[in-house]
Image (cartoon, rainbow, N blue to C red; front, top):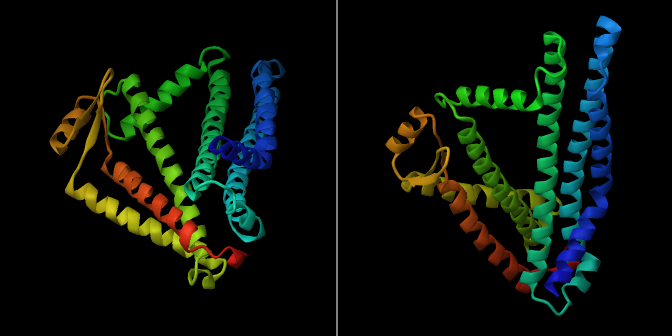
Length: 302
C-alpha cells in the first residue's frame, strides 16, 4: 500500500512540472547545436549575433528552470493541502493506512521534486554561465576548441576555492567539498518540505486554523526559528567538522584541526547544525503524524 501511495504522489507532482523539463531539454539541445556553429565566418557582426542568440537561449533555459522551481513548490504544497485536508482529505484520511505512511509518501515525493527542480535550476544557471564564457573565450583566442568546458569549469572552481581561502586547492578536494555541501543542501530541502507540511497540518487543527491563510506561513517560520535556534546552540556546544582531503573524509572536533586542514589545501565543513536539524526534523515528523491522527479538523481547510 505504501508503494501505491508513493507512486500516486509522484504522479500527482509530475503532472504539474513535466512539461517544464521537456522545454529545458529542447532548449538544451538547441544550445548544443549552436555550439557547433562557427560564428567567426561572418566577422564581428556574426560574432555579435552569435553571442546575442546564445544569451537569449541561456536566458530562456534559466527562466524555464526557475519557473519549474516555482511550479514545483506550488504543486507539492498545494497537492498536500488538497489531498490531505478539505473535501478530498476526508476521503484520504479514511484509507486503511497509517497517517505516518500518508505523510511519508507525500514527504518523499515532495522532497524528490523539490531537490530535482532546484538542482536543475542550479545546473542550468551554472551551465549557461560556462556556455557563454566558452563562446567569449573561443572568440578571444581565435580557436573554438582552445578552451573546452572542463578547463573552464576547473578554472572557475579554482577561483572560487581561492576566494574561499583554500590555499593551493586541489580540484579533487574542491569537488569533494562541493559534493558534501550538495548533500547538506538536499537534507535541508527535505527538512524544508517537512516543515511546510507541519505548518499546513497545524493550520488545520483547532484552534490554529483561525488565522486562515496567514497561519501556515507563521507556523512555518516559527518551527524553522525554533529548530534552527536549537541547532545553532548545539553547534556551539559540540562542534563537529568533516575534513575533506583528496582521498579521504575524516571527522574533527577541534578548530585547530580545521585551520590546519585549510592551510594545507584541504577542505572542511561544519556538520553539527545539519545533523541536529535532521534529528529535530524526525521529531517534527512524529508530531505532524500525531496531529493528523488526533487534532486535524479536516473541514477547516480552505
